[in-house]
Amino acid sequence: MKATLLLVTCVLLSAVLAFSDRFENDSPDKTFVLAAAAGGMLEVKLGELAMKKAVSAKCKDFGKMMITDHTKVNDELKAMAAKKQVTIPAALSPAKQQKFDSLAAQSGEKFDLLYMNMMIASHEETIGLFQNESNEGKDPDFKKWADSKIPALKHHLEMAKALWPANSAGSTVK
Image (cartoon, rainbow, N blue to C red):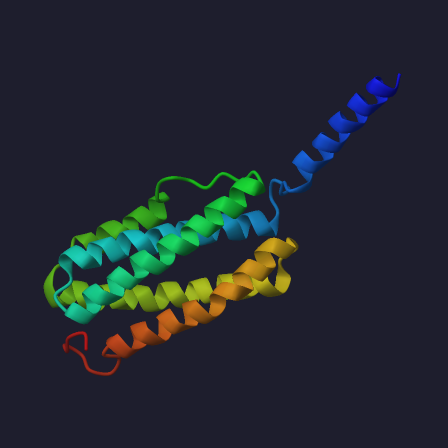
């Protein structure tokens, strides 16, 4: 009898633990995870593209930094998502792929300018996404994680803005 009771208790405890880290199917936290993963994947792929196609050494360096920094963040996010049983897509969404393809079609200084413009827009969007999760998220792990990434995202944004010739049409990336 004691063995049966112990077995039932272990099974129930295992079930509770297995489901305690799951997200609800349509939770705002899951939406954050999927959006952050999609954005991070695009940042890495665009960084790889910049390493190949950028004219400016600073633009290439920025691309390299995006690969390094966002790969690390993406890996952290994948590990956390796996614990919550959220599957992150392995490929870009059609909308993100279209952004990648539109930049891949460019070359020379135009590529550099469009890449840096994309980085500014992307980081502004990502900062908003992470701030929203930090402030409004329900999952304490993702709230804390999102909050910890905001300073680096803001740093990336400031660096991108420093390379973007905001008020000088036709000039190259600094």
